[in-house]
Image (cartoon, rainbow over all chains, first blue to last red; front, side, top):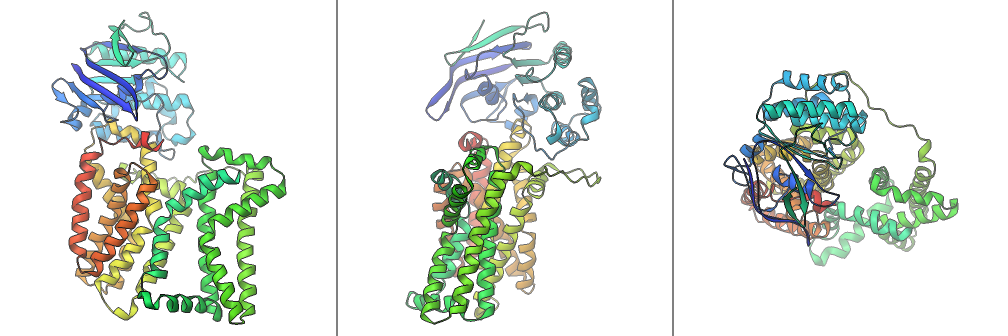
Length: 208
Length: 365
């Protein structure tokens, strides 16, 4: 499904990632690792956020050759999302609906699921960090992507919201969707059925 | 502390306002033959002290410059990354005031040079009333700026937060327009100053070349001055995109659409200049079309250049200087249409090819 080959990423002279191959098929995957190991960099590479050396393919679609088509197949929620503070939550979701050609009913259901519906008429600048995180998760889950990349989805959200997120991931995974999740917190199989656990060690992605 | 202020804020001020200084330099030294340069500048200075109208123009220009300085510093002090400057608040009143005075002295250096020349000329010509006016207005401006900064740093925490005005008008703002709303919401004074200066420069250029008559080249020089006044604005817009719209990079939006968004933004931002252009050209279609091509190409160049130099402001300034001279040469040599099209024809493919290949978020950090 997702194939990464000959990946090399440097920030100036600092090399963060350097590996020959990493592949995943359908499933739910957890990427472990401490600060600065390259988890977010790997996610930002796959989501087309940053330039890199190497190739990223998903179901035969190459990120560099067909960036728009590739991006329509993936969805990315950043660890620390930043949105314009004067925009209302609803405006942001509507933009995602338009960009992903999604159904507004699905967005409304997601907003209800995360108990965010009453706040969507407010400007993002008035949101707490937890609300902002939930908004970013709603935006990421809108549409019909094949691969969902969630960078630290558990930080700043409460236990109930985390459980709701697990339930949603499980439901979507049963529909054939793939999830790539990074988290500092331990994710046990009781909370979420994980297919594989990876870790970045010495610039390489290894399976644990 | 003064060293930090100069190295951070003053340096950034001069870098960001290079466009204005470039135009000022051109007006003072570039519009006349080298042999007439001394006479021309002497006449300009004398005009500024010999009549009440001349003095008024000089003082209004200084006030405009000081307002620009004030709003720039105010905007920077409101940012998180400049919180360290608030440490000045722990100094005693006199030390704080002295620090701000010297700091504003550095920022007002272009005016100070002018003040010295005016003082010398006033003494030489026995215009003592003008001399008193010059000294008192300039002193008031520097003292006023220092006092405002002292107040802001020491007593800023007592100020009530500005609340957003809810107009209760539900309008769906298209994505491309978000940077414009950012300017209107968060930087209204900066936009106002930019537009006022742009229009002053535009009109100033037309007046300067009034003897040439109805010539497309005069309109394009005026438009070039206006475009250069937008250097800070374009940088602000790009910084907003990098900080707050970065999330859209993972969405299926083509680079063509992103570029079209920028062109729409520039078209809207330059609306007052377009109006001036149309009226000043006396509705001459050839001049209007040339103005549109040149204006849009110039603005797009300012944006593309920031990508080319990876937000390295030092390099940016060197390129701006080059852009200014090559633009002037092409306008005066009647190559403006070709130049505008070439500029547009180079910036468009550069942006399309390099948007995904450049990570300005990292470069800017």
